[in-house]
Image (tube, rainbow, N blue to C red; front, side, top):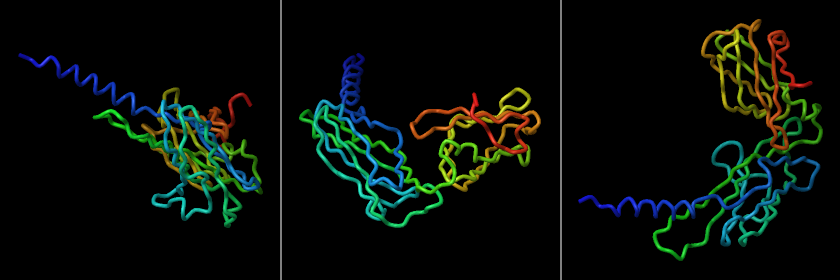
Length: 246
């Protein structure tokens, strides 16, 4: 006889795990911009869990393996207890150490919830970590940040590759990059980020020529909103996309 209880046990266990594994903290932003002239940058964290948690926050550099202790910032508080329904302001403070003055610097802010030990047995608890970008922005940049996407230079140097160079001082986050050639799509890339001075090549599904190519993409601005851009067939000489509706 089949064991009819096994599927029921699996369903109950899955429900228990799902109830405790969902993310219970909510950040009030998807990115943090830290102007160099400000004393600090802040974000707010809400605890949506039904119980209190430990909230841990720290910074990492753009590369791997560098933690907050070796960076020119302090995160306050690094660890704090947050009651159910409570809010906590996390502050990032620059130590005053020298930073590049001609371009943005990118860091990663990690915010992690550490749940309390459950009183029930056989319950899986997971500490969810959220990771968002922190842009440290010097105060003496020549270009306005809203113009950052127009500092990208696009080209089709070999027909089978789409090339882009970020000639500006800001990081540019691209979303849904699409290249149309002769009315059909030869490239689609979900997202990509270009640091100041960085270049990237995107392989095309087939060769494309500038005279019949149209490029569409969106850029994430400081507020987390998507701004659409287009580079039409007549604009490839300059290689400069323009915002739609401009």
